[in-house]
Image (cartoon, rainbow, N blue to C red; front, side, top):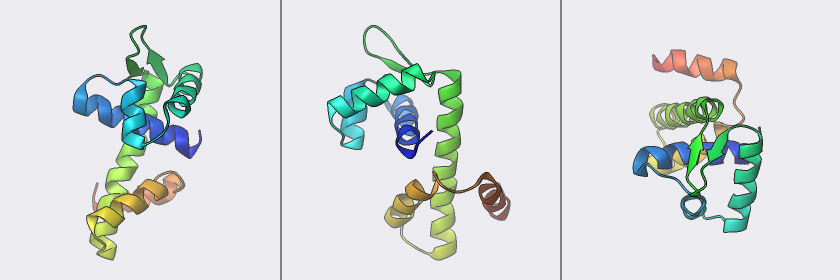
Length: 119
C-alpha cells in the first residue's frame, strides 16, 4: 500500500472516532483534497478490501482496513511523542515529521523506538 492510501485509512479512522460517520466529503475537507481525488481513492480502497461504502455514502473500515489504519495511527502517535521528547521539537513540527516517517520506517526500527519509549 502506498503512503496516500495509508493517509486515507488513518484519516477515516480518526474521523470515525471523532464524528461517528464518515463520508467522502469529510475526507476531502480534512485532507484538503478535491472530491474527485477522494472518490478515486475510496474506490481503490474499497476494491482492495480496506473499506466498505454503504448505499447512503457512509464509509466504514473493514477488519483489514481497521488493522492497517490502527497500525499507522499508532506509529503516528508514538513517533510524534518520540520526536518531541528526544529532539525537543515543538508539537507541530513533530506531528508533521511523524506523518512523513510513519510510512517509511521499518517495523524493526519502530519496535526499537517502542522499546526505548517503554511501550
